[in-house]
Image (cartoon, rainbow, N blue to C red; front, side):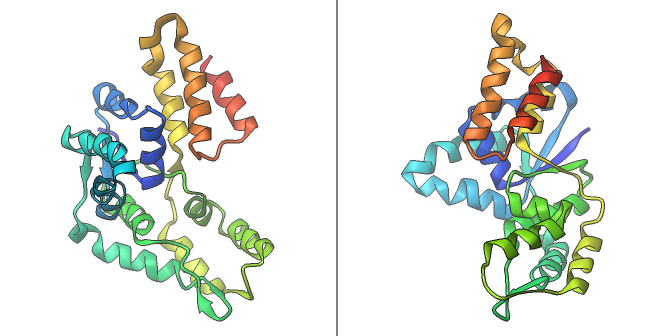
Length: 224
């Protein structure tokens, strides 16, 4: 069985672009199971169900959980590791002598879930978390360039965060779509398979999934 952790940003991208069915496709063809931490469930399902303009997206995502394609992890299982992640990351950078909260609980729980459960990757589109894990120095440079204030970096705390998150594999929702395409997800559109795949990638980018022109071209070339 293939297990992945899903962050709010990746789930929203899939839902808002009508690509959520790819999760069902993965479950059917790869016995994949998607894990949703409790803070993510609260953020994208429980709370939006009470807000009319977000309700339909929340209903779609709730169905994914109720159908057993995704499971909501329990807070108890993640509590200790989430505290470790939060303590490690939110002391890395100070702005005007105050700690800068680089991660919120949802992202921290996703990183915690990576270690608590037997997963192969964390699907997340949100840029800050991806950079923190993959290239924290680049994130610090971006913060400096944005001149958010007098910025200080605690290199020891940053090194501790890198230890805590060492080995975490990050993917984006668009990569899920690309893999689904390779496995035949878009064959349901018959002669329009390639057109549907290209349109899905463009929809993901418009929805906010950070995808450069070069990456878009590479995904298309690989899957044509």
